[in-house]
Amino acid sequence: FYVRRRVRADRLLAHRAATTGEKPSVNDYLIRACALALLEVPAVNIQVHGTDIHQFHQADIAVAVATDRGLVTPIVFGADDLGLAEIANAMKGLAQKARSGKLRPEEFSGGSFSLSNLGGFGVEQFDAIINPPQGAILAVGTARPEPIDDDGAIRIVPVLHLSLSCDHRAIDGADAGRFMAALARLIEQPALLTGV
View 1 (cartoon, rainbow, N blue to C red):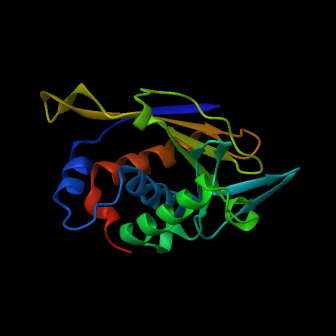
View 2: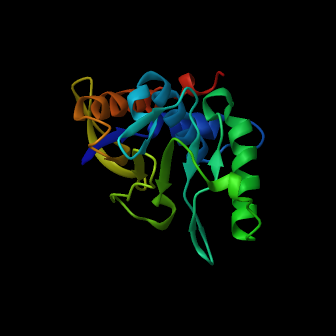
């Protein structure tokens, strides 16, 4: 089943723009936000093996990377314990290895959750297919200007469309909703993403 939510991205984009030195990508922020949301809602941080559900104590985020050979999902292990700069460095190395076909099997096997971001291609919204044995994957579209209610005033700000695909054998709707609420809070208050 799918749970969808719009999230304002203006504060995250402003936070990123104000960062000095090498800036983490928007995807790096999203990896960190997913990792922290998974700690808050561990029922989504799982793998499904037949009738067994394995819950993880750390967030191992598999990130979809497009290559000439197709889609690969290298994993940022323990993303909940990494800062934005560490996630950015890890992703740079993993993406380079993925595109050159040099990923080792242990770098793309497993993971407790997946993130697929097609925003860089101008895709506004989509639903992603779960990578078994994981129980969920988050699909992220491009940030586009849309009207939002900002304390009673209508403002036009960049908005992300998020879609969470869940395996209903292991995750129920309430937990999916709690995860999306936690994720939205973290994206809309990016200062929460800067500490470890």
